[in-house]
Image 1 (cartoon, rainbow, N blue to C red):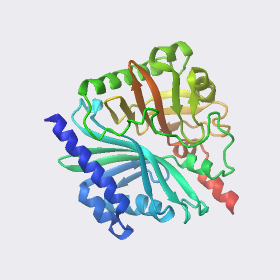
Image 2 (tube, rainbow, N blue to C red):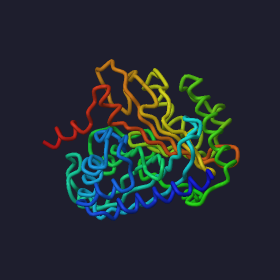
Image 3 (cartoon, rainbow, N blue to C red):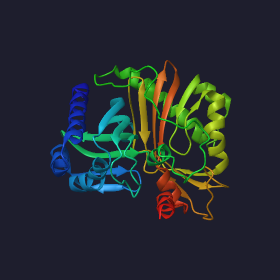
Image 4 (cartoon, rainbow, N blue to C red):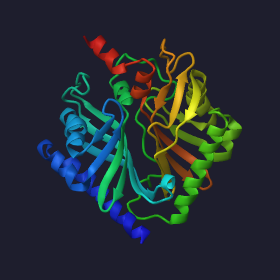
Length: 335
């Protein structure tokens, strides 16, 4: 029965996304309302933040995106569904990740259009209950988009800058139900890895990585950090600068932890509370404030080790928490 319910959830979310992509702006609120509950709400990256109801999701999120980038083409790389470990597997969540391709024809968040094609890296989580989508998360890597435009607002990333592709194995679209035991293996592994990291005070060493990761691991990082390859590249391109630039304050938990087949992940709202030590991503702040990190992590398991990781960090929100408003800086430069 569980498998049948999850298949139905997959069909509902696939239809929902397909119809959002096709709908004219004047019909977006009606389209979203058709698939969602009366109390539907979304957690989105800054500056969209939390949105409640189909009208607000349409008017404040999707219409601005579709007005600025058209025509929109959804290029999905990962899709899976699974029950949520956080609530003892009582809720079903459907996850997808990829890029939204469009021509940047009209201003977006005050950013001047280029009239060129751009790729918006995104990840979504949707909870399905009683044949309706009741809540969701939409992470859009706006900082990666700003870097794509080569806007002069942040220093050079410590990792590789570019588009983050889908899985090396090209098998990330799990539209058909995968064996339940494979999903359990994936979820157990990523939780073991995360517990080791948090238990070590967010400090990473090669011996730690060797326990959970393939030697040729790929870490597809967010805008402002970039991607890293192999143990040594990961330490140099991400964890070294990340751990040197921030003091770990608190792990605040996840809203969803789920997996299917070789793919799994989570998101939090926020996941972590961190405090800048000297600078972070080359940005300095006179603030002594603690910032919230809203994070998505998706993983691909290869046998008994992790092979790839795609990570979204709502950097605009975190930086604003500690007194750095990147969108404000851009608009000041523009003016």
